[in-house]
Length: 109
Image (cartoon, rainbow, N blue to C red; front, side, top):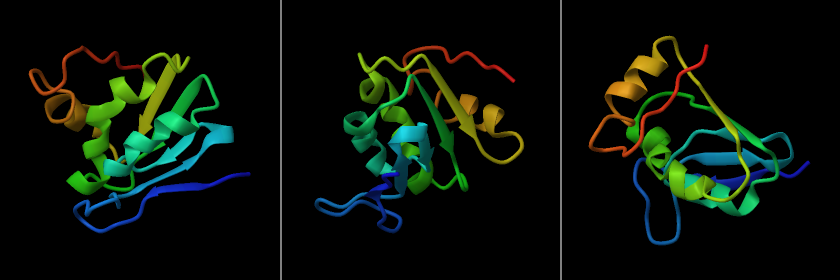
């Protein structure tokens, strides 16, 4: 099993280092979506991604804004985002709100 540390830096990116994002490609698991999330693109091996957010600080969620570019033509048909209770409402009002995010995100329980 490969584990890729795509971002491990503190609260802001610096030169060629990025904020929190760890991926296990064989299982489609991503832990946190900091600026390192852009690196997920080169490691996608599944038709789904399960993204687990440890908490909702910007340095752990800002990479979600890159999700369309990261997954473009990668064959990923399902993305699930997990976190604390109420995360769906938070993401809809913040990360995935118009005009910040250009498309509507379907919600499935």
